Length: 190
Ligand code: HEM
Ligand code: HEM
Image 1 (cartoon, rainbow, N blue to C red):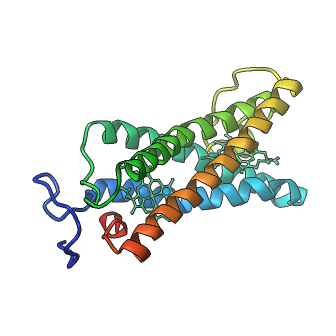
Image 2 (cartoon, rainbow, N blue to C red; image 1 turned 180 degrees about the vertical axis):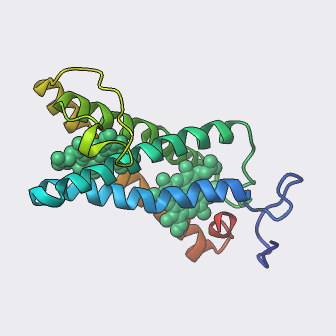
Image 3 (tube, rainbow, N blue to C red; image 1 turned 120 degrees about the vertical axis):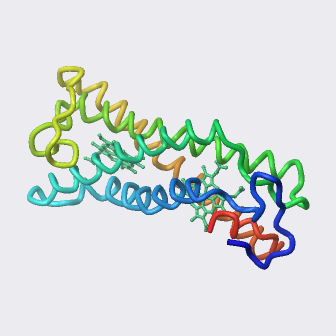
């Protein structure tokens, strides 16, 4: 679809200046999933025992789906070229945007792994009532190890906050380009 935004940059791979359909699918499937994960992870400890297991199943299954999605997205991204950024974006702002994107990719892979090994170390892996998607038992790599579990849980918590901070920075950057500079940055991903 060609947009009526004169400032969007084009190249031969992206005649409309936009991210490909595949890139958009990867991007917009991840966004609501991360919203559910950050909220569900943060409130699980306040949930009563009865629906708690359902929360774990949703959180852990969705988290691993995000891992698979992020892995596929990264492999695909490394084999393709994104559309050019608006010409007026300074070298510094480009570097910051790239750094934020790279950090998001890394944390989208690290965070589910931390979560998975946290549950393993607690001795409550994704089996039985909290099996992956409710039905698929996943491997248990260790016996319960409370100290390790606490450390991994702490790391999962810190990386959760780091992800939230990166998302806020990413959103601020995109909205700044869209509202202040009106340069079509947001439209490339819609
Ligand atoms: C991108 C994926 C994920 C995100 C963004 C995420 C986010 C979070 C957050 C923000 C918390 C709250 C941390 C705290 O206690 O302060 C949390 C807790 C937790 N997460 Fe995840 N998580 C993800 C994936 C996973 C996966 C794949 C698993 C397990 C297979 C998992 C297992 C857990 C567990 C066991 C807790 C502790 C809940 C509790 O009892 O309080 N997470 N998660
Ligand atoms: C969970 C939250 C989000 C994550 C993890 C995320 C992740 C990413 C990543 C990794 C890229 C780089 C794509 C690439 O070149 O490989 C990207 C680009 C982009 N995202 Fe997001 N995003 C999130 C939320 C949003 C939201 C809410 C918006 C819009 C309001 C948005 C708009 C964009 C736009 C316009 C681009 C292209 C910008 C550019 O090339 O600098 N993102 N996003």
